Image (cartoon, rainbow, N blue to C red; front, side, top):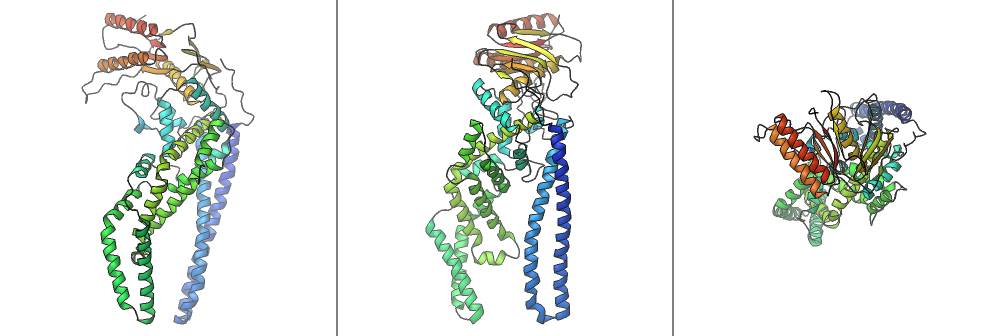
Length: 545
């Protein structure tokens, strides 16, 4: 078994408290600055009103001065508001971190119920998702891509080399508090940003608008319309040119409208939170890592033009496209064929860059999942990184407890496989913790393949798939009894053992409880003997001593 991970020199709770106090002070200062700038804006407006009232029409040209001043102050106010939002997000980041450290996190995060799979071979049994689940404790990712990757890792065992690679990355990221904060302060903290499936689908659909000649023609037509209109308004000449240009614009707009509308509608959902995605990418591209895995992922984001620059460009294009919805700008936008031209620009971007988006989302998802696990490791400095070995099957730990339970949870030892016991029969009274013990062992194996530390003083584990029958779910809607649901799950476990050639940890709680004692005993004996003979290791609870 591996030696316990020493407690870090930095007390993580004290460090979070120090940073929280600093960010609260920053937020208070930003609030005060916001109030002062708001008053300046009101003063400029009031001054402009006084100028008009006192000076009348002759003062109208002088209104340009307060107008320009107002625009400058408004731009500065935007930076103040952004700084205030970042400070508020940082405060929330450390408050949530302290809640996790102090075991006050349950119900405060994302439960992940939408990721539940009814027939998964262990997810519901181990409470991977739901209120107070392992997912809620781990899920600090900012993007949907990161959340998707974390979900996939929670549900899928890996080999020893992959687990050790993740573990090396997590060890490094556990100390990178600044990196975790830099990502956490981007965008709205109440939800994950960027709908990765929608963005992937949009990036890979056929391009609807293309052709440089058409784009040049549109720009030329719009310029001609504006120029002829300006000449007509100033001199009264070229009225016929204005009418011809307006007629041509109307024909072009009607001809392209179906495809333009399709582009505008298609980009609406994927474009949400592109600024957040660009920000996350920029933070990761600028970071430097010692872990070969992390540095390889970072370099992949910087091939050619950095991914953050490309996404930021798309975000600007979409913002410009959406500006036609402004009532004040609607008429000039129509004259300039604004929507049509920017729809072409966005489609040209997608034709050039779209194929890279799925790869970027996969890369950012993997890095974000590792960062989330690194945060979990940092906030649990007394946990130990398991020794992930090639040979097995084996699962052994001392002073093992469930990671989501309070500090006073009872710890126990376990030793399975590795040339020793392959099956443990657990008995005891109701509510004595038998099912919790099964979940503790299963959750520890899940954490080991994530590359995360586990709640033990030492742990040794080989690559293991998990098959669990702890919570049998009957269904009135599906006409499925509890007994049938359990039999179905047991068949899944048997099939898993056969497919995995015995590298399986089975966790069975009061199996075959829906039948009589004699049949239950005979069936359980045959099942357990078959699982062990096939090479699996595991635990079973029972009252049938």
